[in-house]
Length: 139
Image 1 (cartoon, rainbow, N blue to C red):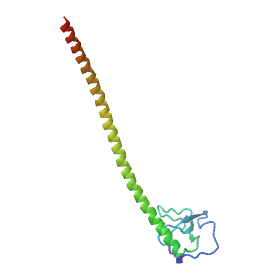
Image 2 (image 1 turned 120 degrees about the vertical axis):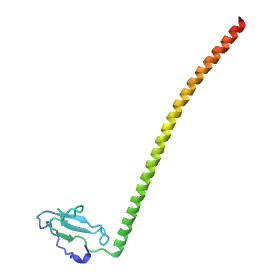
Image 3 (image 1 turned 90 degrees about the horizontal axis):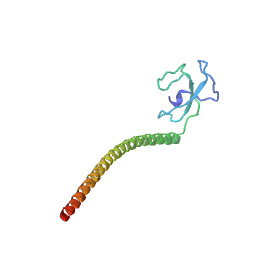
Image 4 (image 1 turned 120 degrees about the horizontal axis):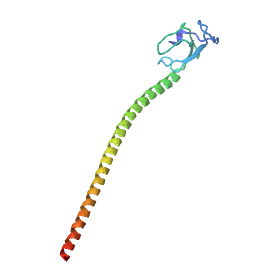
């Protein structure tokens, strides 16, 4: 869709050749980033189905500096999206590490409780033996 392909007059139709109200859409091509156009509402950018193929630029052409700014912003957006994916992967690794540490912590807590219970049993046995020994000495 080059700028020269379609004229931009002040006349703005409200319906396309299908008789359907027109859709005001935005071009995100590198040649016309952010430039608005009128198209058949049956146009589907995902499938490229164009209905009656009606097309007319809504905006007059852009200045070079506008194209440069939009191109730069689109590049920054792509870089930020890539950075976000890297951060998501990093967060996932950290969440997995946290979960593993929490599992290890729970195992250590269970072992500590078992060890404490074992020590209590040993202390009772030692106390019993000590008392038994003192009683035997008295007899």
